[in-house]
Amino acid sequence: MNIKIIVATHKAYAMPQNELYLPVQVGAALNEPIAGYTPDNTGQHISAQNPFYNELTALYWAKYHLADQDVVGLAHYRRYLGQRASHDLRDILNAEQIATLLSDHDVIVPKKRHYYIESQEQHYLNAHAALPYETMLAVVAEKYPQFAAATTQMRTSKAAHLFNMSIMKQAQFQAYTDFVFDVLGEVAKRVDLDQYTGQDRRALGFLGERLMDVWLLGSHQNYVEVPLVQTERTNWLDKGYQFLKRHFGKNGGKTHF
Image (spheres, rainbow, N blue to C red):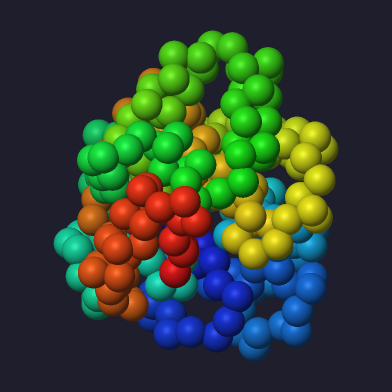
């Protein structure tokens, strides 16, 4: 089984010493190259759109450059799918573990993050501009009416598969990326993202996280969840405080930090 996991990064960083993992520099069209990393601006690409798409420019690159692989995945420079939750790169999934998981499933995703006191929709709108999200819902309704129930389930769920991370068999990968980039491309046509600053400018990347659950549910994917390996520790006290501040406060709190 040929497997390749791209590791999206915008800077030089400690990478897995395993040829399974391919460091891909996102937004390479806009920045100086990072020695030893694969740029996302070769062949068919959307590298220059990285300020809006985040790590999804690496995913787009993989769609057209890794079509000969049996399995394709996306990790972040500081987040990976793992065999156990940890902060140690030695715990990330290896080829044998991926093959075993995909012998019974078609897709591997990170364990859901639970919000408990608010839905996915509430969580998103408490932290982001509403127009791109509302436009995404309209596009899915127009172009993918068969996903109506899945969209409602995503909106009302109090848990989400985040980070745009996954490992998939090639057929599922192509179907998933067809859907995601079709929807996000249409949102980009309808919404002037240049009007936004800060994290709102990166709306397409954040919307992609919501589309993952719409696609998983709407296309009835047979998926399995695994823990996250995060090389940087999370300050859960601060993160929890900011979450509550966004939920109950008028001015919100920071997110995606």
